[in-house]
Length: 586
Image 1: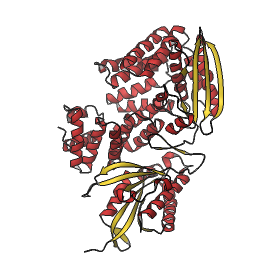
Image 2 (image 1 turned 135 degrees about the vertical axis):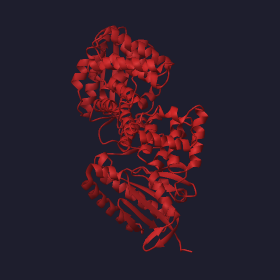
Image 3 (image 1 turned 120 degrees about the vertical axis):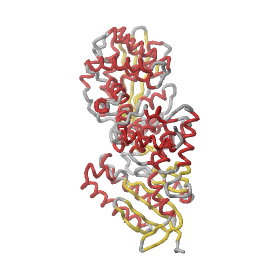
Image 4 (image 1 turned 90 degrees about the vertical axis):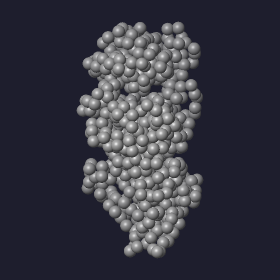
């Protein structure tokens, strides 16, 4: 019988190390050496012992779990501080797993099942985070550590006979007062971006006038559409900010929920043929009003109001507009008053988002296009609306909806559509047709035109994943989620699929569980879960996940599902099919 001793085991590994080396091998290795020295120093300071380094991985033990956790938190805080000035795609970030149990000491190293558990927990951690077992969680003082703990479920791991309850520990301490973190109402920690960060709240209509209400909705979306193209601005997505349409939260509450510093708020009131608009820009950190302006204009001057508000915000935040002058000129081509009215009515229905409203939005945008045939904006928005109806299967004829979306998108693009919506439509349609090169080019064009757009980032990530570039897709899926903290499950779904495509199965499993916690009928998440569990040979869990898929879609088959998955690499599709069959799909 081999001798064993109790210990707290810390296993750390660098997230996406091979990808970082592919970008800059020398620079990455230099940073790794520096950070390993930091790691070792903190372990020594907390009376731990480093047993070995294996490339970018570290194994250490401590006598007590409390010391191990305190040390790991200190390490992650220090590395976050060191990484702060480094571009996101170049940072060396550790994921850490901690377990407590029996180890077998041999020749200065340690072995055993509990060491393997720590290594498996590491794979579930986020970059810069710590994943702990239930044994370790029992000694963690969240308040003292200024951390938040999220339960990841009871997990099974390859080559381990027992299931492990896993918890994600995220450090919530403020490292630098210039980049504070917020704990949102979803429980996530959101670090304030380094660039100016803004949320545009829906302009509030102060009376019951239908024209004013639709103008308020349209103005909100048009200002956001313009601001999305600011290369130096982090703009919270409309999906998140429009949730406050009928609410009146405090500036601090919105700032916390969305992880932004600045808020744009406004009101609209109609008086006969004039509109009175008030807009203000607030610093939510201290409640200070940075800028405020009143506008009293005729209905003919709607775009002038829009341009004045947008330009004032740009000046106040001291960022430069990408293609801004060109966008103003294009928008000013929409001068027909009736076209303008229908265009704003279309935005108002699009914001409402019901099936009936989307159909009305199509009609309004198409009417605006007929009245102002030289403007690319109405056909671009009509194209997006048709795509959205077809994608969400809100019609009995999705094929016709997609054909109409393509016709309108090409019309808008022929007039050099500055909004980017026509490119997003074409990117998705090209992907459905498995025209992967064209899909990637269209998505990249939209992302360059709309750098702060969650839909552009998510579309680009989705296409990269189907092109077998899943490791790259992960960062864009994460970007879409960060832009939309109050997020639709479609973005986490793309992230889960990208983790799976990158072979990061434990992370895919954790991401799928997070989606299912929000929506138990999310069949795509159950399918990712089934495939990932099958990949790690946990067939019991894979079949349980597939049972949930068939509960919602009892007629689903492997062949039918693969027809919806436009992989460029046929071998990857065949591998997925085999794993789904192993999980019980026929």
